[in-house]
Length: 150
Image (cartoon, rainbow, N blue to C red; front, side, top):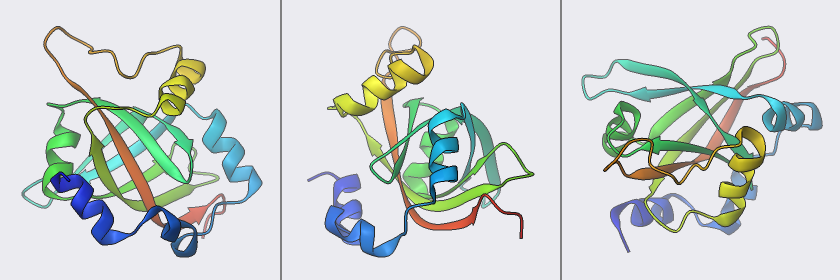
């Protein structure tokens, strides 16, 4: 078992996810299916925030994000796996906090297919020669805002 797997299992098992977090309502789930970008916030080693828009799919109570292994967001997640995610529309905010894990190989076929259908993009294909692709699997710890400004 690798480091990321050990951390994942130390936090929770798959059977515990539904007990920890309630799924958002149907309006939010529709937005998660249709919206193309989410803002991903990671923490740099100096403690400052790194915020970047990314493509995503939301399946099985998880956010999935493709990235090159050498990206800043991946380097940050290796040091600090806690992340925040926010859909772009500030009038109807959807904000979640979670823990990100790196999937280096064996990308779930359902997730690769979901990216192909949503973006016409092979999330597993390197973006430049010699680069390695990873998937970020983000399990939500809590939904801060689910479609309503507070």
